[in-house]
Length: 276
Length: 285
Image 1 (cartoon, rainbow over the protein chains, first blue to last red):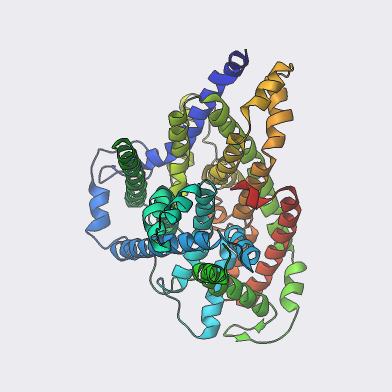
Image 2: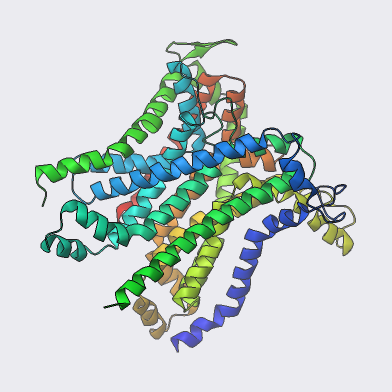
């Protein structure tokens, strides 16, 4: 009876959900198609032939500013944020499994860091570096700015992971004489690995696409999102779309890699559980 | 278990987190508060203790208009994302029976969030522009004679972009709250004769109140602190508080920007202190 009634709204809701997905992906697909415009094509439909002209323009000529350099900086920044963020989030979450003084304070600071408008962080770090006589760089001030955004996310994800974590395994390892380090390496780490990969993925993509917190903190050299923002005001060719398609493809690659890693990990663990 | 040695270990484990927060959150915010009382001229900042920046900002029509704009964007975006996000979460949580399918659809909703916001904004241009796809369809089908001008570079496109960018922040916490609801409660409501709508509003909504509050906090902070979406999607035609601060930064009027930032901060803190009365974050993870 209950299922029969629940199914009643199923069809309209499915249509609505489908429309939501079209709404989410449609625009990105549109510029994906438009980035393959012919050399004489414009910013809107119709397609004026099909070519990879604009992708070539992205890599070969210097007409789009410092694309290669900003891409390199963003990748490097994203990867360093990913590594340190994952490590810091894991450490902090481990620390939070015990009661200690100041735990609430640091927790609430993390929440504030997450929900404070990005422009305040950007402005604050910008002025602070200015007053301290330090010049901002993408690998110092922008790095710190990104961490204030990715670290709370990482911490919350790790909290969620450890909340679902059964301490019986740890206790068993300790009973069997494992040292703290062995327990961590052979018991805790493999169990929280999928969560860690998730944190890594989040940190990388959030940093790679971060704009608001970077704008006052990146110094002389632009990161990729800043470069793209600059282009929106002065580029009127589909090269802008080619850049968008390229960046989105990179993000997709990162997401796919993480999902595959998580799936592979699960597969390996289930195989290990099957063998006696 | 809580021997002094182990407690000490907690301290060094949270040390990196604390250091990041101290250097890049606490100190910068303190800097903003201090500098907001400073004076400035065209060339430099002058350490001082003056309320001029606040007095100027609080009595200016520009600030007032920017705040009205910001609240309008925030409330409109909140309403739409709440209804849309709740419906999507409800569909995923209660209509999809298979776990695998549910996870798959959920990931499908999450992926766009992990791609560039600016690109996602730009991608509306070929759709909404004067010669865009939507106008092409409208004029082609004879529904309008002239291309519709308000599709792009208007309040409409700003709110559309906000909804496009941020609905996920509503979906995730509500979905998370819904998956914790004991299915027996819903069956009980049905058995007691509640209609589907009654079940939703009398059982499900109260039970995912915390998810709704967390989503609301995210939407409000993202919209109220935004400057890039408003700038890009309104074509520079309308200003929010974020745009105001951004413009002052561009003109190197840091104390003025800092004062506006402090006012924004206080506004947001007041709103959040009200919202957080309804929820205990620690229980939601």
